[in-house]
Image (tube, rainbow, N blue to C red; front, side):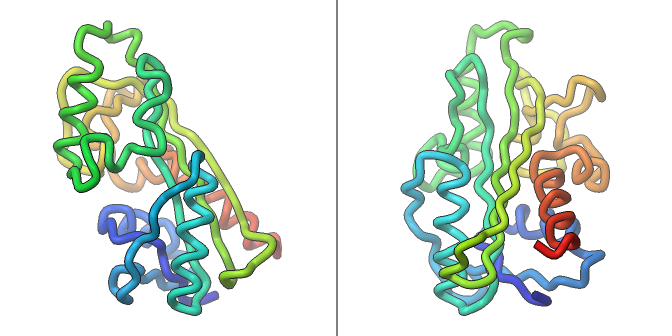
Length: 198
């Protein structure tokens, strides 16, 4: 598998995955660049949605497909926004709108009660009917700040504080972020599985 379609149109996500996979020589291309529209995400879990997206991308291109479904789960909000993280403020919401809604939802919640974690489910399919997809998942613990900090990353990164470092995900060097993040850790698990001949 030297060329894999990624089931995304998110440039930030594609860039992050490309950096992480650069040492393998695997070339990633976005499904959006190949004219593939995203499917409706009807799963109830991150893994279900990742599988659905990977199958759709692989079927549409005839290529191996990599998909992730990831999001933020905030304890004070009962795990929301969860699988709806990308569209928390509405179907076509951008990062800024989602961040505003998150801050509004947490208004009045004390800093110590703003515990949260990023989750990532990563799926690799060799072909659309692959009966043994590689599935890896990881999470990243943090806390939600009362206002954004940092210019890097994407999504909720400016609000996601990494307590051990005192920095938000948006303030981290990309290399360090890739080592610590939910997506980076899930991808390391995937790469280990591939190297093991799975």
